[in-house]
Image (tube, rainbow, N blue to C red; front, side, top):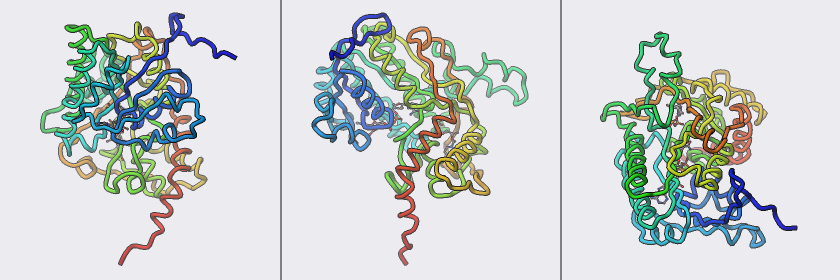
Length: 389
Ligand code: NAD
Ligand code: UDP
């Protein structure tokens, strides 16, 4: 039976394209590759220095329906002349490559700035010069702190959404002082956004900028000492997963008062696919992609993860499940934080009709089931090893 013709949001048939995906071996890239292989006819030239997270797509039996549609290119975009050729061979480039873990922003600010700005420059240039479409991954962190955070703590205007909802075309970008090197990442991302936007305005580059708001799910980052360095500090989902797997209290930085909205990676990937397949609706836009309904403080996240993990692992929670730690102790000098991040969804709703579906409880249940199944045994083996005398 012939497969049904896939159509875009305007009812036009979708033609198969070739996508150069840079950073395809990371968390978001791995989910995007899976989606493109399982549900579309598109080809992917997957570029990264690592491939572990997409090994299952690359090394499956030759009978897998997508073996001819995904090819891995192990290269570092900092210094590899093959990059332009791959962009030229593709209809669309998606750039996900970045250093994007907060523990690096204040401790490796040079690497952070180079990775998020300098290394992205040739990608933008090659797309512009060769008239290729670009989807560039930025971050919600370009908004920085909310306007409301500068009001007195009990000020009634703090409750007014105008002072905290983050809108692509209206909100300012508010960063801390230079010595707070936390903002090196946000600042580099903001400048590359401005450059992409300017290439669009002056040279006609067809672009879309994505601002992810805390996308989380399986394969995010690493578990220290298992599939990443023992001393490494990943993002909060992996930090808390690691604590739960090791039966340690979850560390709340500066009391865990910051607020975040978390969106399930599988919901967010639906939004990216809509951008890929609806260029006329996505070009020239900056999109917030998040779930405004899933807002919690980091402390509430820790409490919910403790409860969900106990349910999926069958292990009772610790009597004292969390411990407070100062940001200086946890991240070192120069750390600062975004206070609150609620995405305005007007533009993505209007252009692509996208809405997130998964509640925080449900996304944590599937993610922590994955973490337990993937890591519990390995952690048991590592922690039961006698210490060398
Ligand atoms: P990730 O670290 O899992 O993936 C990034 C990938 O890029 C990694 O596999 C890395 O090896 C690769 N890479 C980095 N530098 C490279 C280079 N020089 N050459 C080749 N490959 C290189 O991160 P992620 O969560 O998948 O994020 C992807 C993008 O989305 C990043 O640009 C990030 O800033 C942005 N983002 C993500 C989130 C989120 O919630 N996950 C939030 C805000 C922004
Ligand atoms: N955080 C925490 N404990 C941890 C890891 C992170 O309290 O073990 C906090 C961090 O200070 C921040 C929030 O969790 O307020 C989210 O951190 P993440 O690393 O996921 O990135 P961010 O959302 O800040 O970009």
